[in-house]
Length: 72
Image (cartoon, rainbow, N blue to C red):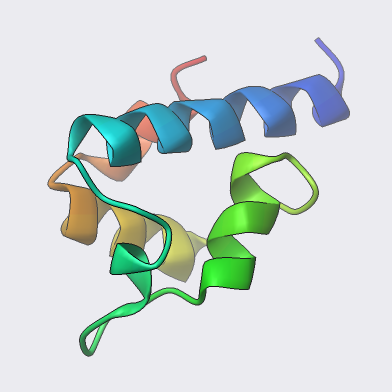
């Protein structure tokens, strides 16, 4: 699997966890640990990759271990 495909699969996995939690991208942008909507959108569509801090914040918000995002 090439890097572009990996990045897209990670983004789809994050989206699945977000939707399973019943959250919108806008919901992710609230609170002290909010992640900007644009950042979430870019990650979920595979246009950008999350850094470690963002993976940590996503995991915390979605109640998922960050390593689960990478299990593609």
